[in-house]
Amino acid sequence: MLQLIMLPLVFVGLVNLFNNRLGVYSRALVVLIIAILLLQFVPFGSDKGFPQYSDQISQWNLWSISPSRSLEASLFTLSILGISLFVARMNTLQHKRLIKFIFLGFAINLLIGVIQLSYGSKVKISGVLPFDIWSGVFANENHFSSLVYMVIPLVAWRVLVETWRPLAYFLIVGLIVLFQFSIGSRAGMAIAVSLALFSYIWILLDQISIGKKFVGLTVIILLIIVGTNFLDTQSILEGDYRQVIFATTWIAIQQHINTGTGLGSFILVYPMFEATNDVRYVYANQAHNDYLQLLLELGLIFIPVALLYLILIIRNMFRNQFTQYICISLFAVLLHSIIDYPLRTMAIAVVFGTLSAILLSERGELNVSEKRQ
Image (tube, rainbow, N blue to C red; front, side, top):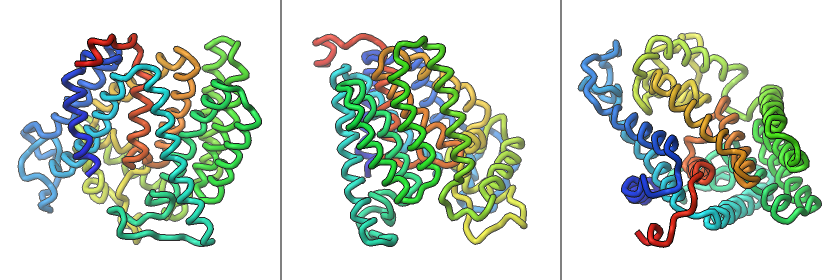
């Protein structure tokens, strides 16, 4: 329902694709993403070597082996793209006001999470949303933790940059980090603690050169990676099964690297390459690494798209302090995506798309006549 409601924003955004604050390369990225989505339904003329063992596999030799799943994934992507394009038309003041809505959503989730924790055990809420609610209004604690740590750099910008109240900052992020420990997401703990400390240090280093700041950002990224590997993640995956999924996905990638298997097709393709000894009582619905999964589903075309996005956010990061903290929040999600799939949750994807649009809105404010169009 959310995807269908947000689809009109896609049309508004596309109609005004050249009447927003996105730069030339950012607009090119939007066009490239839409082209990739359309490519999934183009006749390919080859069965890509997959056995036609299920009605879920397309009998028509399209680019995607499963057009129905590609359509579902495309609707999800278009919804986020629509939000991003709509946000890109707003001015800087409106962008800063949007952060307040993110804080409001976080506060609501935090309140629900505190109530759930007060019961002293896992509380399942069924029948309200299409999935069982376990943490906040999320299906599991890992994805809830994504919203939690994304908010920390935004809190730093609001409390430290806008008003400089370090005591209030440490009090707020201290409570956030304690809550993160309470919900039990180990990856979230490592990222939240690292971001809380780094966000404070970042503003103290405001007078140093951009190059040194970039080195500092690289160091914190490495610390987060080491921390998440040390703490591991809260998951139903037993032992090192996550590494087994990575290895199996890589085998599949090597055989379909040129064109990919089709957006959303992972759940159908993975079992074809899974060794008998690796089969568990649970099945792998995701690769638990968004980069590996997208490389399998999209093929080589994913690499330039990912690199272009990364270059754009780094290039726009140092425009001002607001964009610096926006970028830190985005980097946290991109790092988490190495060992999980937070961006496949609508709530996280909407926040990520909103922050990306704010960061990539590099052109000047639209004039009054443009705003009325």
